[in-house]
Image (cartoon, rainbow, N blue to C red; front, side):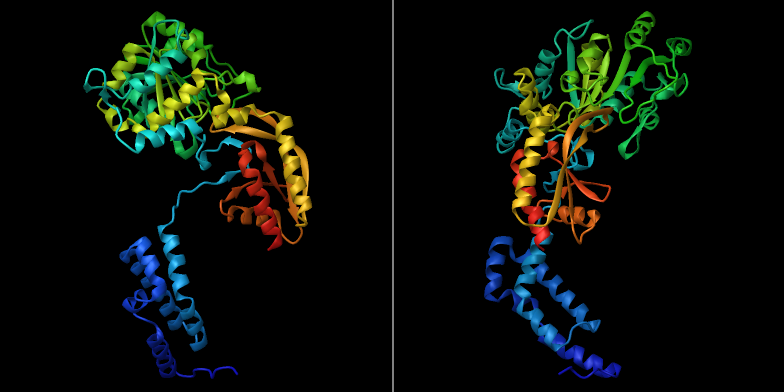
Length: 484
């Protein structure tokens, strides 16, 4: 039988007060046997905070008239479970793994390049104890943290520079590398750059803004689509300190265009005694033509052209941790390192550990050990084989999911090779009763979240960016979603 409706404010207040009295105090709740295990594992303070939040939410429901006596009784029977759920939510990690099924290899929003197994192992070994980060073990005195990767970059880039041996230092990202180099080499003086290279990339990173913060003076030359070597030459004056080339990163200018060859820009700089700096952005150590990507400048190629200072990222085409790498002439790199801002922008032992392991894989030419490079090198046949295996599992599950393998394209991402794609095989999925957007949403709410693409009212899964061991996780998630 329905409970009688409350007709007056006083009756409502009386019933609410009666329901409030049924709620235990924090101390009473924490003394319950089921709370003991939570207190033991998570601490009295954290459990008390969770209990306080749960009881507070119940009081709000009662005050709003959303709970009657039966509802409160039901809530009280599940009070312990509610406290535990709240505890897990508040004490759980916000940053957590996801499965990248988008086909974007260097997905900035998903953390860019995954680290290799060797990098993770080296981080664990060095982070869990003390290390020789800035200690010369042989000499028994203070050392420099640069040596751990400078020695490896020197070997990898040996012979690339036409001028002198290359030195390398590392800061926390490429924006910091560009800023530090400009501030060191051109503070208060002019830097000449083409208008067609005044780019903005993700997160509102704009070359003119970074240059202004570095206190270098921007001198634009040429036009958006055409800049000639004569434009640079006419702009050179007594206050010129750098000629800057900027990789356009995530866009291309096509059609009626012109850009001087890097070698010509270097020759101009040499003739005037002005260094040439290039912001590569991604900065590949591997010749990407081997995976079918054309037109993406590499670190060795730029050094061979005579560029004096290069800046590039560690977590893009290099396939390592987030870092900004500065490579080039030893005297210029030494000046940049001596800048007081270097200490504010330097990286910690975890970055060095991951970067060292990544560079060692390059020296061994074990490119498949670096996840991002392995994904780029995956053959169409291997992706198709895995996609067909996933489709078979879905068909045999009786889930009702409709799947079709179709031709598609993966992309490098991270602002690298914007015009280049890699052929792939996609799984196109649909489920009766669910829109593609709803299916994609439920995949995102899976544990772990699965991030896919939606096109033409179908969910697209690109296994190029899914680790092989995650294929079965994707199948299980899809079957569970269809069954629910």
